[in-house]
Image (cartoon, rainbow, N blue to C red; front, side):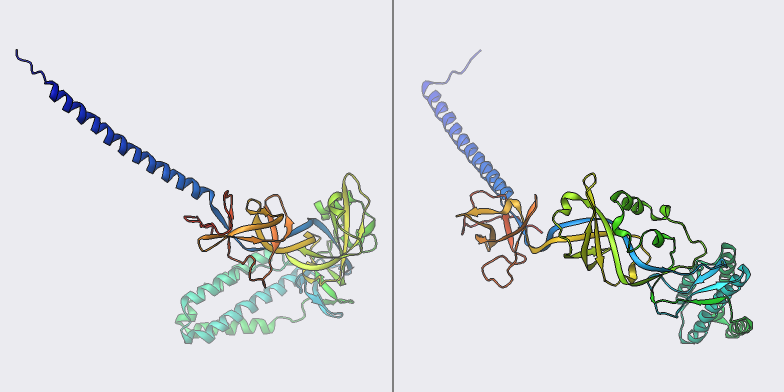
Amino acid sequence: MFVYAPTRKENNVLKKTFTYGRLVFGTLLAIVFAYIIYQVGIALRDQKIQTVHVSLETAGQTVEGTALLVRDEVVLPDITQPYYSLTRSDGEKVASGDHYVRVFSSSAESNSYFDRLSMQTVYDRLSAIQTTFHENYELSDVNQDIQALLAIRPNPGQDFSVSAAVSSELGDILAMRHYALTDEANLEDILNYYTMRLSSSSESYGTLLTTSVGGYYSSTADGFEAILNMENASNISCKEVQKYISDPAVHTTAFASCPGRIVTDYRWKFLLPANAEDAKALKLDKRYQVSIMGDRITATLTSVSPEIEGMVVLEFTSSADIGKYSAYRTAEVTVVIEEYTGYRIPIDAMRMIDGKTGVFCLQGYAARYVEVDILWKTDRYYIVDADLTSEDGLFTNDYVIVNTKGIYDGKVVTNTPLSN
């Protein structure tokens, strides 16, 4: 068997070829690694260079919680007849001598009154249909009116049986809606029938009561005003206030036959249980901005109760319009102690250079250092002064750089992800 053996010259050629191949391969591998390292460096740089959108915000120190409302109130007199219909809405202003309630002598009289109201409602709606169906009154419009009418609920004085009867009759009449589209004569007959029933019904249902004082009407008269009023509000303990807040009705004697109450004048108070440490920032007889159920009013701190178990009761007095609060015994309240409006800056974005505070923001592709005045600080962000007249300061919609090392004024910053 013949075996080929390379010559010395051929062995030298093979060795040179192998060495050259390793050199080329090593070079290519180094280039690949260098490219990977470059891309990783870019990625890491992009992760570090981030921005936050500058926007105006209001922040500060507040005391907030659930407060007990106390008002100067007049309770309407007890009504011997238990059947009544409210003629006023909660918070509606009532002048002296105005009607505020209709009292009935019996359930039958009450039922008749609500029956008349229902008939009048149906008559008015069908009259409107008769007037407009010649003007292309669409079936969809009629159906929409029907749904609105069927959603009508009885007044508080109406019992369930009357409610069921009224709803049934209303449904029967509205089921005839095709008359409004197909047969004018039948619709006319229905309207004549209701005209006759309405004209024959008595107008003197019940007795209309009037109020002897002016104020704001509230359908709630639970006896609370006899227990806690403007005079004794300053003398109750924090625990008592908290008990009243938890459930005012538990601590009062309900006036079952009383048709409501009149809240007089604009004088009122709210009692706010608060942490004693938070209350130390408040000053007696000082006027504060208060947010109550979303509305801003001005109230004066008129009393602070003795501290018990780290809690006090803050008494604020106000002369703000109380109409919309007349039906409430408690409310969510926020008392503003200090308030600042400025640009919100994350803590990570703030820099100290030459003893002055500032931030780096993007100006094109360059970082620009801007000095700022800190107004307020939390554990997450600063509120800094927003000088809207300055040409060198921060502006709304600027991008502030955060979490970045090695940034200096004028440094070119590329591939920077911008915040929303």
